[in-house]
Image (cartoon, rainbow, N blue to C red):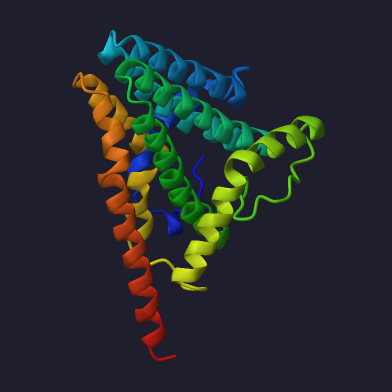
Length: 262
């Protein structure tokens, strides 16, 4: 059910819901519940949380729904892998659903606070930060022989024999519009900072603080505290500074590798 072999495992802080996801998958494995149904369920959970945030009511419930979203998000791909039916359709639908939840959450925060510019900028920052972690993680999976449902280069839509080709074409096109430029940007920035250099030890774990699960946890904690707008400030301010620090570490480590004797 895991995305990388045990030898390539690392501490993924954004994947805190994984143990609960394994529990859920074990109980769903013999049922007719599909991974796409889990994706739809977590999208509904995110949409409901957004509605509560927009009306600024039942904020602890909104926070709980965001944790549930992360739990179900960790389970959909795990269920597909446990059934040995990873899906490229599911891969793209999952990414599109995450984007939809992000848009709904920050639209809700903009509506409730009236701070549209702040929340629009926060949504963009969150998406880019998450894409940065995803880029490193997908490259790590490809290099370690892990799950290949996500690929460093998503310019081609080729899927599995059981993927519906028309649906795959559609979701891939939508993915390309939303994420294609982000994938290209991350690849070019990383190549500029550290051409063909391995990630420094601990980089993936450090970058996982920018993963979707951790970002939703930040929003949930702020909502639970009755201050959901604090999350927008977090992604615009501290999170961007943290990302800049990671990029600096990446560049300095690449220079260190160049100086090492061959």
